[in-house]
Amino acid sequence: MDDADRQVLRRCRVQLVSELQVANLWDALLTCELFQPDMIEDIQRAGSGSRRDQARQLVTDLETRGSRALPLFISCLEDTGQHSLASLLRTSSQTARRDPEAIRHLHLKPVAVRPEELRAVKQDPSKPAPGRLPPAVLGPEKLYPQVLRPGVPRPVDIGAGGFKKKDQGFEVVSASREDRVPGGNPEPDARPFQEPPGGYDQPDAVSSLPTPSDIFVSYSTFPGFVSWRDTKSGSWYIETLDDVLEQWAPSDDLQSLLLRVANAVSEKGTYKQIPGCFNFLRKKLFFKTS
Image (tube, rainbow, N blue to C red; front, side, top):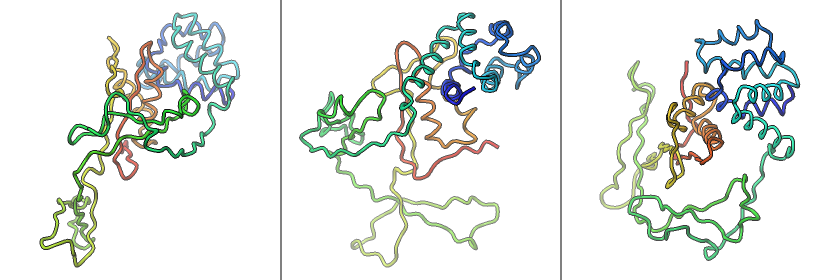
């Protein structure tokens, strides 16, 4: 299998594992000689033998079945009535071959925008609700559609004016190695930072962090839009998140995992949905999986 087809399978892997009906495929895969009977038996015994484990192993093994593997697999999907998955793979393959630039790195250039060129959407960003982020997304009107093209990351400004509260942070007190109790919690203590009485002079430097640091908020959909669910398998977001964590948690950080989730969810359904997040983390967050 060439690299372009391999990348198509990997981009569609989460949806294939989630929706592929493998029981209907075995005869078709044997008929087109994409797999031998002993290979099919190995796939059926993969993992716990569940549909998901079989689908996951099938997608993995497809990468080893030669240059015609992807078109033959798409044909098998159509023969067994799995037209949505066949269409997904065919469209992804045609897009990658028609536009090789689609998979290149994008080098975005910053654009200076004067305040008067910003337009507010739906609400006045100068009047945000107390204690909340402004709901309006601002963007330069003259940049659309020449710069803000579909499929290209959109530079936006989130209104940050109108607030008066000042964050004094909290003091971080790190214990020395000699003072730590063996087997104790290695995390440093933290307590709210208070202004010293009588002014701002302090004899020694104090390490502090912003109060809302190390917070990560994930949304199943863009605020104001419907979060969809399947009547049998449940929420698109939760189901996809579960698949992505199972496959990629050992190697990817949290934000990279959620990028995979957003990409997979965005390809689902007639009506569309795109998850997102607010990231106030100071470091990459990895899950300990072993």
